[in-house]
Amino acid sequence: MVCPAPAGRQPLLRLICRIFPTYTPGVLSDVFAAVSNPARRVILDELRKGSRTAGELTSLLDLSRPAASEHLAVLRGAGLVREERQGRNRVYHLQPAALAEIGGWVKNFEHYWNQRLDALADLLDEEKPS
Image (cartoon, rainbow, N blue to C red; front, top):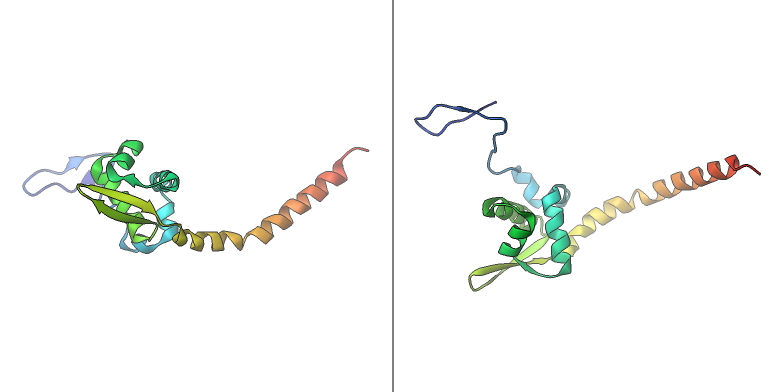
């Protein structure tokens, strides 16, 4: 793949080109898209334990500051986290109410899976040797 080169330079051959931002604008408000990234799920899991500074979250994920900032921006845009400035630090807090959308969607499948598991249990009971 040939990546676009800065002005006045030749394009470079690279295996991966990172295009900023790594999400489409619609992702910012989409809770499903926000939690689809494993790094963002780790951030949410960590914030479930309590508020954390941006630096703590960055070191936890072993990411660069710009990459962590991008993930946090997506989570903020989806309403999953809230940012608070405390002096020089930015402290992030979980806002779990936005996760209700995902919970509601998953709940729609609960009846389906319960039926499937009941059918499997019946089948296994039928095949048990007496």
